Length: 228
Length: 227
Image (cartoon, rainbow over all chains, first blue to last red; front, side, top):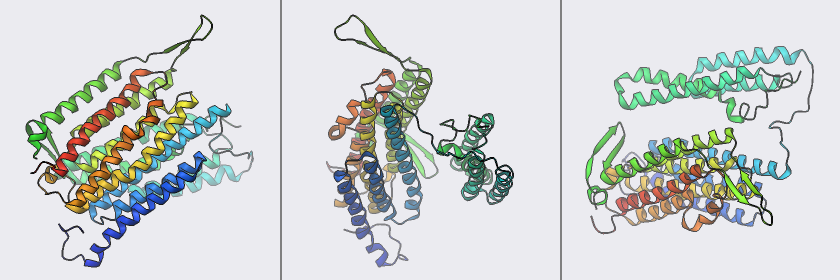
């Protein structure tokens, strides 16, 4: 019983007939993932294998194949990522409690004292941030965020000022609020769409750029200790 | 079965562009109840667990440290707001997203505890919650594919087909896994064995309210007693 409603005539019947196979593929992927989990005794492997089940979920949503489905994939993906982050965080803190010692997020045994670690990161980071600001939106945010991340990781051996990173986290939160306000304006007062567009575009640019917090830079206070 | 039969009285809609919220006495009451409970939990202080030690007259007190306390209070407020949102939303996909948010936040509330057993059960619950996203989103997406809409106001007028029944079963399995009811309750019950009770209560409350709301939504979609 294929979908009989609301399929426009421009859509070819081949595309419509792909829906049922896609649903079966999604369910099959989920089943394969579940089977693998049931064989697996290691917790870490089980966690990684659940990702396969979530891929099945993405296939099921993507099978619908409309604009709305495209808009629904993104929240699905975000939910999946958030859950896998939360669960891996639980797994890590459980193992730390069992072993009674904490582990660094990015273990780097390097203690180089080289000129290039001082000069090059700033230059490259500035270029990436400017290019990102020029692009704006999600892509720009990702590029500028890459620049900031590169800066932090290369400066890590020398210690990064902690106050700056707390400020960055705050700015990221405010930018996120701008993004949400932008979306609210789209819904509540559609006539101000240009303002809403710019709020959303630059809000998400700053937000994504400062998403260094996501990898736990601030949360784990890895960079607070000056390693001079 | 129309909205008024299920919800008591149809009070009106709140149109926000594509997303239309509808108000009935039933879901407005549950929305208010979730908000009131959230407010109470936001104001309350955490309890400390006191355990008597076996064989001696000593007792052991488990306290929640200040940082952990703050994070838990924040997460339980988020959980309460997500529950309230799931009560009042008129959009099937938003409902599934709220349910997922409740699941993630539930993991977060117990994430920082020191007991290894509790962390273990939280991990198992997390795995189940993540697997449950497949039927949850899959069910919502296949309802979208069959009917062309995910607005409950529209779904009420669309006659049920067999595929919608299948999607609803998927949706129900998803909600059951995500909120940790009946077949998956064992892992979640273990999560309560930790200090800091008022914040743990919201985990329980959210799953109760979500199940009630899910039943309403499934009745709206499937119309088992005729239109």
